[in-house]
Length: 191
Image 1 (cartoon, helix red, strand yellow):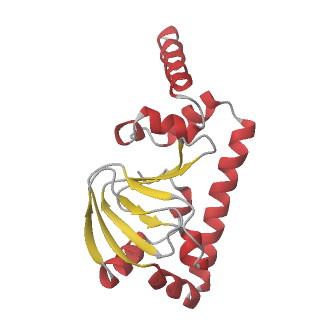
Image 2 (tube, rainbow, N blue to C red):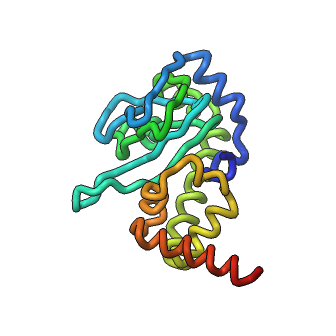
């Protein structure tokens, strides 16, 4: 789903895949398996051959909240951990059966140190994507955010459960269900 993580648009996926394939090993993850956990210090970087993962945290009520997703043919890992060697701040959990080339995060960190243009491109892309998402929480309604996401990535409904999608959009599953019904009703009314 190449339109989901916009920071990847100007990156060479073959380069990142080869970096992981040449310096790592192919691992198989079952649905629910962890790629990494919050507070881990070990830095991992991967490239998803097939499958998908969610980035999740636990809120103050003990509820899981989804902060992001990654899909086939894209990198996976905690970018801040890889670059700064800080603790991992999010669980990364397989959403489906997945095959991932996994290498030590230091491989990417060294590559970024030796290629400042790539480092800048990734950092600027992540900042723009994160800032846009943050601003959308204030300037758009949940219905607009859902509609925009479906327009950009219609196949997401086949990859992510509605509960996980609701969490990502920061609404309850019931609210998302109402939005979906409203959109369906609006579409039928316009026919």
